[in-house]
Length: 162
Image (cartoon, rainbow, N blue to C red; front, side, top):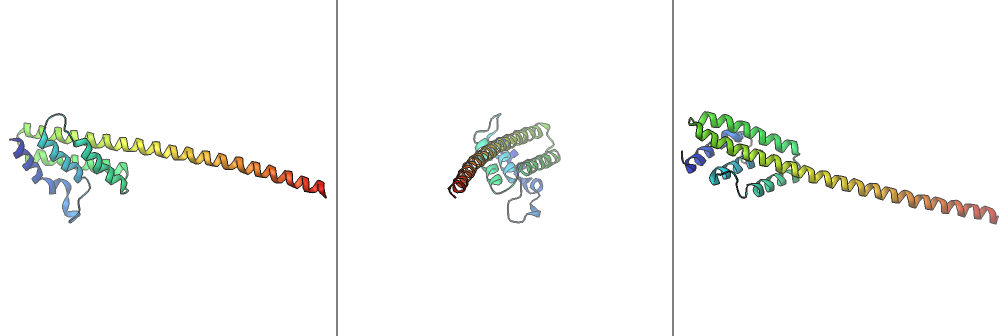
């Protein structure tokens, strides 16, 4: 099957793979995975230019809107699993199946890499925020100790004055 025919055949599987009936007119979770799969099949080859950037944007958007890393990975895994089942059912030629499975694997690995980079970045931001908070607490304790010492000194001077 030609690359164009293969992309069209895979795009027909979209509703089945994404289980769109449950979500109505909004994009179901994992739709970015499926769209990236279509781009990967369209371009072909071992390396898909722009796949990282587009997936990075889609995953970053989901994370910014409150989805956790686990949810994003779970959605990608679910779409991957459904795609493999649909691919085995829809394509009789093992070569076509392998092309789709390889592209799906490439997209799944890319999603995992983008999510892991986002998790590492979030963890480093959280650690920096925690360190800033600890430093602020330490400075506050020092200021309070100085004020306590000053108050104690003033109280002893007042006692001596009386």
